[in-house]
Length: 130
Image 1 (cartoon, rainbow, N blue to C red):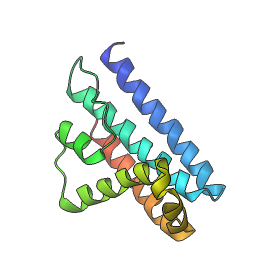
Image 2 (cartoon, helix red, strand yellow):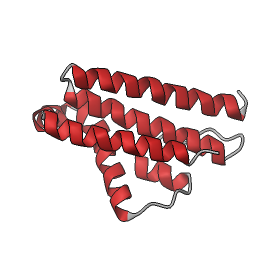
Image 3 (spheres, rainbow, N blue to C red):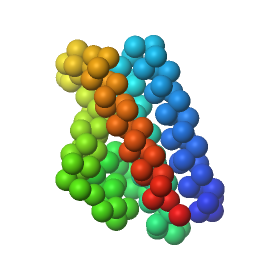
């Protein structure tokens, strides 16, 4: 796969996941909405990685702060904090030890606030692409 095709793959996948997250929010599956929101940002960061590192595959990690660092994105502390929080959505939804607590924490208001911010970060990250 050439660079542009690879980048397109990650961006189309992120866009698809954003639509999925929106559907999950409407279905009141707030924990899974935020989990998929993590995937949206992860895939967008991987597109940026491809954009900035010719002929290299993105690292196989899920940590959004680390991915941002690999992409050499300058981030303020509050941006790192939010990306770290979204990374936790991935862990809290995936592992049984955390699932129920996360499910209880995911009220409509909590999910809406975080999902809106995920959508803002998605737009910001896309704006960093060449």
